[in-house]
Amino acid sequence: MLGLNKKDTSLLLIVAGLALFAPFLLNPFPADSGLAQFNAGYPDLMQRFVIFGIFAIGFNILFGLTGYLSFGHAAFLGVGSYCVVWMYKLVDYNVIWGLPLAIVVSALFSLLIGFVSLRRSGIYFSILTLAFAQMSFNLAYSVLTPITNGETGLQVYSNDPQVLLGATEPNAPHLFGIVMNQSKTLSMGAWEFTFNNGYYFCAVILMVVFYLAIRIFRSPFGMMLRAVKTNQTRMNYTGLSPRPYTLAAFVISGMYAGLAGGLMAAMDPLAGAERMQWTASGEVVLMTILGGAGTLLGPVLGAGFIKYFENIFSKINDGVLHSWFSFLPDGMENLLVGIVHPFVGKGWHLTLGLLFMAVVIFLPGGLMEGGERLKKRFSKTPEVKDPEHRPEDKPHVAE
Image (tube, rainbow, N blue to C red; front, side, top):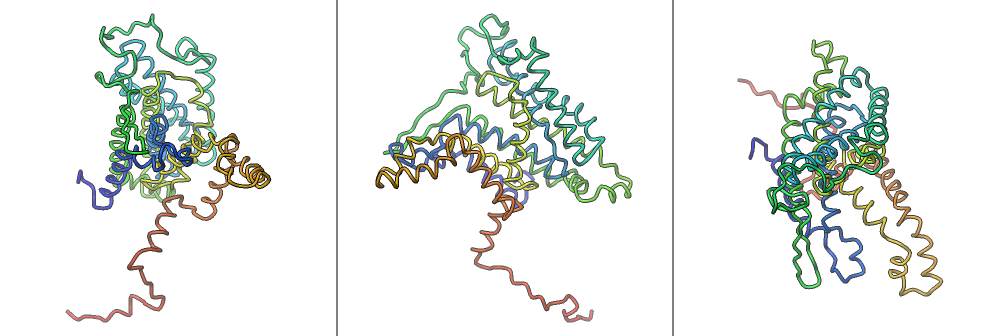
């Protein structure tokens, strides 16, 4: 299917199924249930799952395959957002103009940064990318204010040219009239499912870029990137320079980040310098490691995991906790609320940090390694290894 083997086709179908049926899968609890707090099937959060999944997939092409750890990918995320909003201001609200520009400009910007940063490797490469990202943030925040509108952020105003804006065209991001922020709600008993145009637009793009990532992973180019990660010295001895391959991976990764930034602006027509901060770069590193660096599905799972904690656990306040433990005596209720309080609400970072530590310690390969262990444990035909078996034990068959 599409040039993929059976295993990769299964992965692609899994991603497609998760993306297309997310409104059902992310709303397991009835709307009037106390557990509805844990539902994540609303448009804004589902869009974040997909957009940051694209961001993490691109980062994984660089970090997962070559081992080069970049702390500057947020710069490309911000550049992509600025490009899309500028196309809103100059042309119209159709996202079809801004997204290709975001990819192209991010590619050129990443080519410049990668050409300089890849002269070094290891921690020096990471520090260089971090320095470039912070310079980009400061330029956007306080220097290039005519282009970025500084700390206020870039947005569309009524006096902007918008030369192709038609009289009947929506005054919101759209794709040939399909407005991104419009949704339809399906009620089934006590459950409510929301289907958002913008989410499905991002979901289709996720499936396309995931397919491209599979092709990159399985290509000779992907094999060369793995060779860079495994042993650059041996690669040099064979007469192959790793730098063109790492630069190409850096540019491709930057294009993914620019696309993700452009999709952020496609969902919300605003671009700010905060998207270029080093914390955003660190976040995508956590997503990739948590899900499983070097795997295809891992970064998507890691992005969903972190965004879930950020948006769901951060909204659990003392009022919600008291409603959960209200069936207990007052003293016990207050005690449990006091115990759980530091791990939710504003303290959700503590819970995420503990989970991240547990994954790194017990599952160095990330969530994907945990899935593989469960698969082996519950497999009906586990592989049996005989330590006494030797290849030479096989009988020799005369021709």
